[in-house]
Length: 480
Image (cartoon, rainbow, N blue to C red; front, side, top):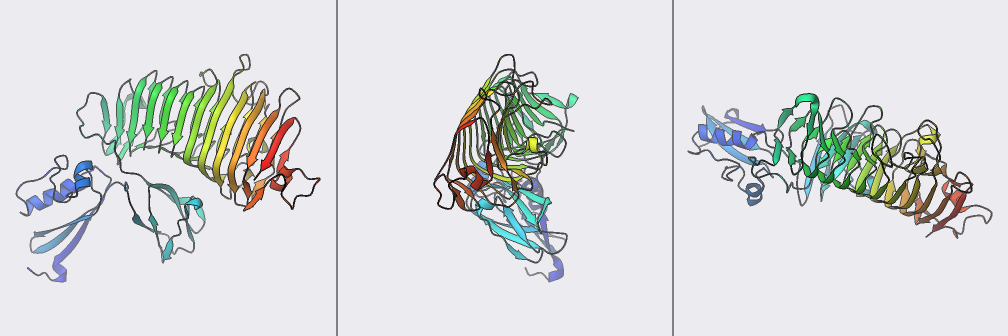
């Protein structure tokens, strides 16, 4: 049967994953007589989700078009995916609704994603999941945070499970605005779910918090891990996610966004064996910190790793280690690793709190065996590249730290013009900064090393990188 143009309608079903687009299309097919039995996504027999991967994963991966007839009109129903989860390659188009695009960029810049621009639309390709900032006309405050996730392999197939706490698409609240997760439970927050409150793991073990949804309280942390062991948090979006007094914690592909005072992203207090993998932090205070005794948590820290991540500090430090501890019972913060990280911004006017890569030892802490490797720092607004100090600030500390030792900066690059003078300074002859190694430090493409030919013999190598190497320091070296 043929139809005139005025009798053809194209209807696109849009919405978060899991809110019923495929089921609505199936119902339309049933009501118009195209099918005589309504399929279910959970049974893998809907018309729109016919691909084996869609049947296996129980959500749409590509757009399906199903035509129906109704009152003499042909209606082309487009059932679109609700999750931005993918594998392989995808093309992304972003439309700017406030005028023409003069310039556009996609960050981190190290991904080398160059968008094409046509009028008010930017188009680019992704060959793998990424956490991105899409920026138009140089505006970083009205940008699009685009979180393109990998296929969710942990989505529960059965919702009737006594060990599962499930939040489906929609808005959720709970008494007291706090959910305490017991041992052995899995919390799944589906894409399209908005949980208003704090989900916390307190004195528990073997807990998982998973999904693609959002956890956002009125203020402060959306997720908290307190005195717990063997906890996995993966995939969700929240405000802050601190870990205190805990062991064997993995936080993977979590996005932390805050905009209020003291909005630290991912703090670690008195904890061991903590892994941050593939996280994205844009915060209104330090993006990630490692402290000893603080806020009721007691003890040092060891074996803390952040890798494959992106940090954006609108205020304070992207990475900050060391000021809090127990003066009466001195602590050690050790075996700290920061590997394969993009730092998009750092904005701090106060000289005491500057530094993209900052270690400030206070409260008699000893900080040792720290590795910064393969870190790319973009042109931040204000602050320092590196700040290593034995720190005594009465506002935050009761004593200076004992020392900073054995710190490696390997394959660190900075491209920009706004960095102020970095600092490496000890406190006295007993409280030193020592054995600090820079390997392949690049400032605007120039490698800084002790024997670089353009360095005057009477210069310290740090002068070539605008790094002040001050008193009470030992063995600060720069190599290719």
